[in-house]
Length: 206
Picture (cartoon, rainbow, N blue to C red):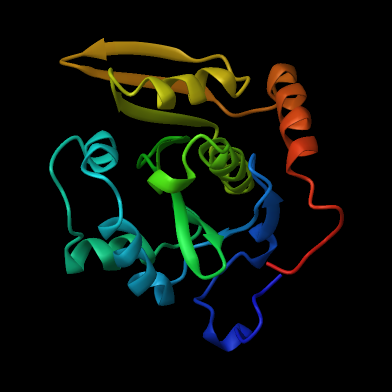
């Protein structure tokens, strides 16, 4: 699915259109999930600027109110293989971003998520996590690693609730979680339950 007004000639090389989908979140809104595009740069800047200081702190481990020009380029220009980023959209507004970056020479990738304050606690983080698993598996990634501040209980609970066997270690206020993303029955069962709640009653354009 490609959004109206966007032709294949406007998409970056290797853009995985098959990863586009719609989903229903907990308050009933229908959102679009799709791979990020370079054209998303202005919307990403607006998204980041609208985040609360606490949300930014939990994601970047410090004060970071404005993305630099280099960060905007790096975050919106990915290869869709070893570096993937997905955005969640309500209309044209970005309300969530998830990404993975493969650790060179390994089958693991580092993952990170951030969700607009107005849309937190609605299942967007888990939706992004599930979609990143789907994307990563296609590219041979076998496990995810994430560094999370120990106080970020919601993110830690997200990882624990996915259904994968999670290992965690703690150092200097940071929890490192590591888990495989292969075929695990507990994950398959949990995903089936989550997908039932995300159904939009048939295919819809993203």
